[in-house]
Length: 112
Image (cartoon, one colour):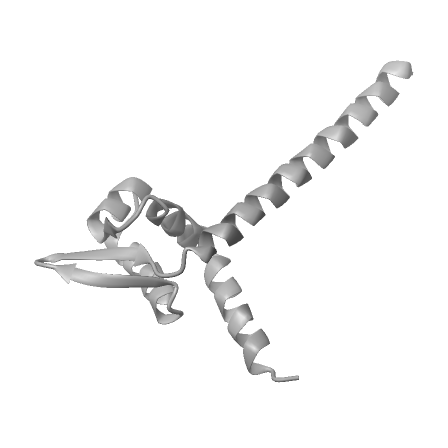
């Protein structure tokens, strides 16, 4: 099997594996945003946001364009949001499983 494809997929998943980058992508879900808007919305330092944007850009997940002094970013492939939505579904399922387990434990405790 060609190892290049799994490696490329893993690289994308690594890029998505940082909370700041996930937050940036969620911010960009609303559409193209200036880096200054991303910084303000996430309440983070410009250098930190720029480093994470550089990782996303290097992997071709986001695209940028200059508009005067502003640099605007957008998600290049909207399928990225489908990945994030699937993760939301996994989180909901995990919470539901935990709640079910807690209810069972509580019933056990009440029977004592």
